[in-house]
Image (cartoon, rainbow, N blue to C red; front, top):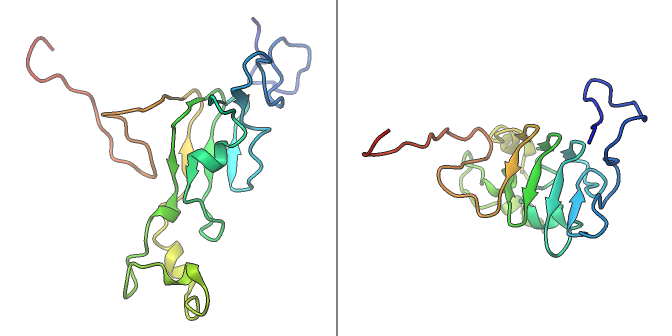
Length: 165
């Protein structure tokens, strides 16, 4: 099958699925291209990236993107041609608690007067930045050791201990 060339994505005379359709495989509605499904302004999805979930791909942001609060300002950016399996989770900066105050408890987010005197700029100084997944990445179900994804993660390399290396 011929695919749209990446160098000239505006061409319409090429074979391949339309990246703007929600369900590219009509008989398998559990699979969906995320770009037309995700409407949150702080989530960017590249063409042809899909999510596979037996309950359907429509609730990707709700099920898979955790602790993503607009007041923090971070983004989840996922490139083109990525495959994301059910059970994948993106833990965003909102999961972190500010370490520069008198307490790590997030008083300000509960309101009712607790937000008074809170300066969001102090929180944003501790934000680690956007979570960026490049293009052509496969995020499988129940990914385990030594996989580590996140904001500025340390790197792991698989090593064989003993035996023929």
